[in-house]
Amino acid sequence: MKNKISIIKIGGNIVNDEKALDTFLANFSKIENTKILIHGGGKIASQLNDKLGIKTIMNEGGRISSAENLDIVTMIDAGLINKKIVSKLQGYNCNALGLSGSDANCILANKRPTSPVEYGFVGDIKAINSSTIKMFLSHGITPVFCAISHDGNGQLLNTNGDIMASEIAIAMSKYIDTELIYCFDKKGVLSDITNEHSTIENINYEKYLALKENKTVNEGILPKMENCFNALNNKVSKVSIGDHSMINGNEIFTTLTL
Amino acid sequence: MKNKISIIKIGGNIVNDEKALDTFLANFSKIENTKILIHGGGKIASQLNDKLGIKTIMNEGGRISSAENLDIVTMIDAGLINKKIVSKLQGYNCNALGLSGSDANCILANKRPTSPVEYGFVGDIKAINSSTIKMFLSHGITPVFCAISHDGNGQLLNTNGDIMASEIAIAMSKYIDTELIYCFDKKGVLSDITNEHSTIENINYEKYLALKENKTVNEGILPKMENCFNALNNKVSKVSIGDHSMINGNEIFTTLTL
Image 1 (tube, chains in turn yellow, blue):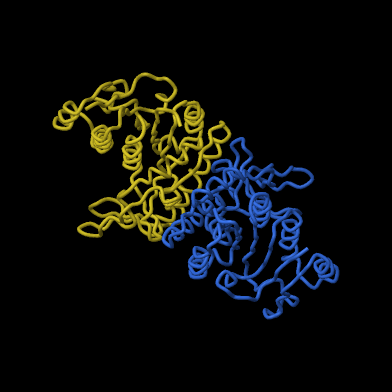
Image 2: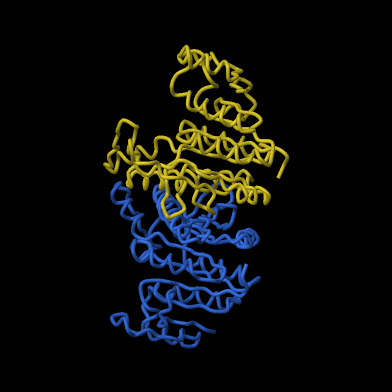
């Protein structure tokens, strides 16, 4: 285990694009720090839902993760995507280990209360089993997490991948210098969503509050930024947001600071 | 790690039956020996193939595992079934870790040659990474393998679960007293396939050859018995075949000896 760890979350835009994913994984495997990858599922699960005629039930709280939806997410995220990523990383000499939160009890969650809003089989993270994760890392293993956790009583739970990444980073930062990187489809936080060259390179908490107040940044990025500041407030040393080219040396991305 | 290990393979008949699977897992979790579970996929993958209109291509060598078929198997076996088993075992206080052969490079395989018969993405096991498996066991982790391996160059491969179980048993037997148990839908090897009370309780190699010669046992069981004797010939100390009730104390099953 090196003296620094990088926790990297990739979103659906990379996962859904075979070529982008392959490029990302080749670059990820070259990162010399100890590292952990967290991946979302993207549109493949929705497409399979559609093909199988499984309905997406929406309510005021968003999409409900029914038992059927959870099965599809488990197939796609923990199965197809996770194992493709792991086997590709192995091909790049990165000793990856695919994990859901239930595997080796790595991530425990509470099923979200059904009242006032029913979310279905959605879990909010309760505990990261950092001793097991550290044990894997100490053996040169690179954990690759899909965004599924469990309740410890036999139930898998659909979990927010961005929050999973920040919670893992917070847990690891107790033991090792930790950086958290969110890779999504933009080169960082944009001051103008219609202009891809408008990356705001540095955002501190004060600026974040101002951007939120004057609605410069769109609602899609706000929860991600909230996770970033939560991580910074909990001893994660560096947090950044950008697209997957930042893993390959591109210097335009957003760095967040307190 | 205890001084004995049990390697147990369960077939589709258990995996496909939620109640039978739950009973099996409750009993499996109570086994005091160090243990490893290997599971097949059963009919869920075929059903999904059918629902999605993915054709099963057959040739003289049997079913061809096309790229599409492999994706479905990866979804169902490595995803849905593996994670359901792992989360249920966690609920029974068994610290399970779901694995494909690509995870932590546990099982390497060679893609089967395309000539004289094309099998598609099917792998024949080349190496079991016993040091990594032993490392997991030494931390009180129970590996749960689906029958998917990889070639080490980024390609997942569909693999025979019975052979995977015997190869894991052979690899572990170099270090620890190892027993191999095949759980399928019958109470062992039957002398009369139409009579479920005709279990042959003890079969040595001579008897096996005689049963094969006079065609007393059906062709379905012969490859499984071949795996059993291969394991016995390679220092696995005990091999048995029966249904899942043998994990719960039922004493009628078949014991194989050299």
